[in-house]
Length: 158
Image 1 (spheres, rainbow, N blue to C red):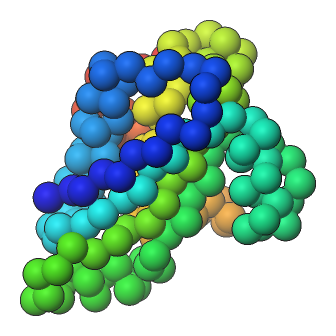
Image 2: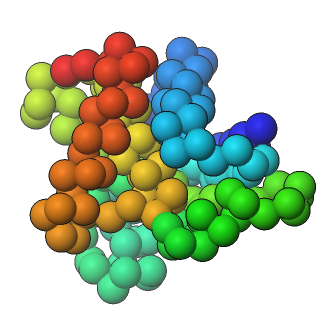
Image 3: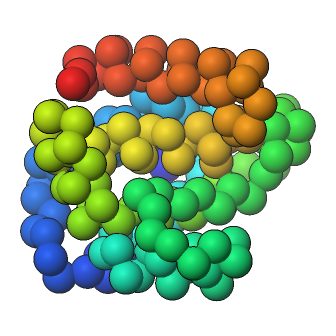
C-alpha cells in the first residue's frame, strides 16, 4: 500500500483529479518495477518556480529554479534491506517536490502535454527515491531505461 501525502503550495495551475489519477498510476508502476513490496509513504508537493528555487537554495545550496527535487530516505542498499525486512510498519520513501509552473514551461518547450511532463517528473523522482541516480553515464542509462519502461507501460508518450 502506498500512502501518498499531497500538498499543493502554488496557485498558478489547477491540479485536476485526472492528473492525480495519472500520478498515482505512475507511482504504483514505479514501485512495481522495483518490486518494493512494503507499505510506504511518499510526500508529493506541488509548488511554483519561486517555491522550488527557495527549496533548492535551502537544501542544495543552488540558487536557481528546477523542475523537480527528490529527497530519498534510503540509498539503494538500504532500500534492498527494507525490502527484505519483516517489519510491517509503513516506511517513508521520501519527498518529491514538483514545480508545476516549470512543468508547464517544459511541456510547451518539448511539444507534449502538461500531464505527460508532470508524470515524467514524478517517475524520474520516484527512481531517485528508490536509490537511483544519474551522476555517472552508466547510472543515467539504467535510470532512463527504467523511466522509459514505466512510461511506455502506462502509454504516456511524447
